[in-house]
Length: 116
Image (cartoon, rainbow, N blue to C red):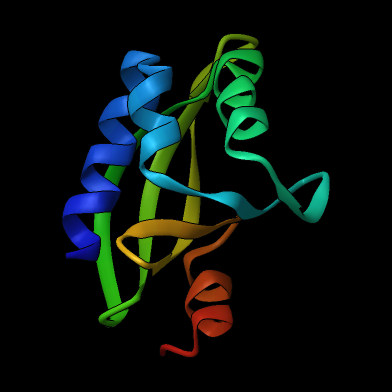
């Protein structure tokens, strides 16, 4: 179930559990954020977790279909400890997270997901 994958992913990212985070995503995984959209290896994705220092607290979940979900989150980084509102579009394939697209606004993530 996608919700379980997404919850486990948040837990792994916040605990810096790189083997768990790597096991939860496809290889490669499609990512999007301030630096653009690209496919990266699962290894590079876990390196981003450490390099960015990001911590994510889920605020609300918005299922779109059985393979697509948008999560509204509070994000913090070491250099900016005050939380920022973000939204992440997750897609799954073959029991793993295949897409992680970050947006600055929930409505943008929902629109990209084909939701509301």
